[in-house]
Amino acid sequence: MTRVFSGMQPSGDPHLGNLLGALAQWVVDQHRAESLYCVVDLHALTSPQDPAELRARTLGLATTYLAVGIDPEVATVFVQSHVPEHAELAWIMQCTAAYGELSRMTQFKDKSDQHEFVSGGLFTYPALMAADILLYDADQVPVGDDQRQHVELTRDLAIRFNSRYGDTFVVPEGVYRTAGARVMDLQHPTRKMSKSLDSPQGTILLADDLADVARKVKRAVTDTDNEVRFDVAAKPGVSNLLSILAACTGADPAELAGTYTQYGPLKADTAEAVVEFLRPIKARHAELSDDPTAVATVLAEGAEHARQLAGATLSRARDHLGMLPRA
Ligand code: ATP
Ligand code: LTN
View 1: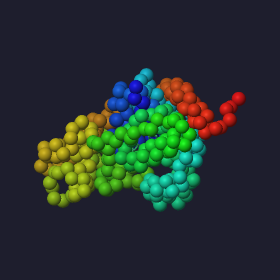
View 2 (view 1 turned 30 degrees about the vertical axis):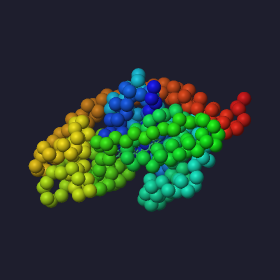
View 3 (view 1 turned 180 degrees about the vertical axis):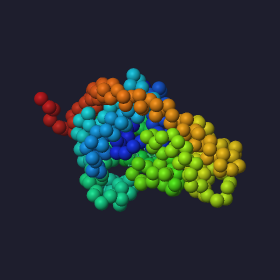
View 4 (view 1 turned 60 degrees about the vertical axis):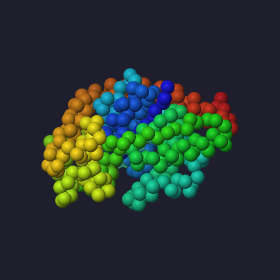
């Protein structure tokens, strides 16, 4: 059976981009593949975190996975740092990656320009991501468009390791969703919606109340020519609304464009679609948050299963590398 692995950082509150670009895909994938979904808390440490917030967000993000419909009876849900094999294979991947290769990662270049404190971990982040994926012999990695370069690097590292030390890792493929793959900020539609961009009016959070959600969509930046057309370059704001509406309703954005002649109705329909998309997820999240021990149990079971898989791969890699077996 195909195996799928993906992860998300507990570094901010989940937003509509995370839900449509990633989590919605995960929910679908769990029924066609053996799926593992990880809360990548070690990745969040690449920038300084408030301890209490990190703890709350880690549990909160795991709760979101379950609230969107990831079923722990079907998929494995766990926290990265509960499986110490990630950190160990990450070191091996750091030693497999070239300095120049890591230097070319655009996410590193963007983030290191934005931050005053640039950790060594931010630089080696893609090696940890490669370890996440390779530990589970994942065939497919569903991610947003922005992670393409990291998945390509993972493939390169797996191929390099296999050719140096013999067949060890499965070479994974990235799976990039088209509708909703890149949800843009509602106020700055040429930038992706993101938890690290300070744009509260342009970002729809799962935690927002539904009236706020509708208001933010209706106030989204469009343009003045009043023509509804799906054209990301020329009409980023309108195209973003069409993509969001399409992703929430399972339609095609270009086809949807033909059914509108004005911005008003497009905004109203998009607002309603987003609200109806979020409503059940919010309700389920609230329910699960009332029972944090149930979520903790899911995570404990998930980690146990993940460790079995990860342990086997790591032993294989250690052996092929020539590391002395542990007594
Ligand atoms: P940051 O702002 O710190 O970069 P983020 O909001 O981009 O964070 P990540 O934790 O980096 O979120 O991403 C989690 C997942 O959500 C990834 O698969 C990523 O591709 C996807 N994702 C993030 N933002 C968007 C977006 N605007 N549109 C579509 N997918 C997104
Ligand atoms: N880098 C990813 C999160 C991430 C991930 C992974 C995604 C960490 N490890 C493994 C897929 C597979 C991000 O920032 N979105």
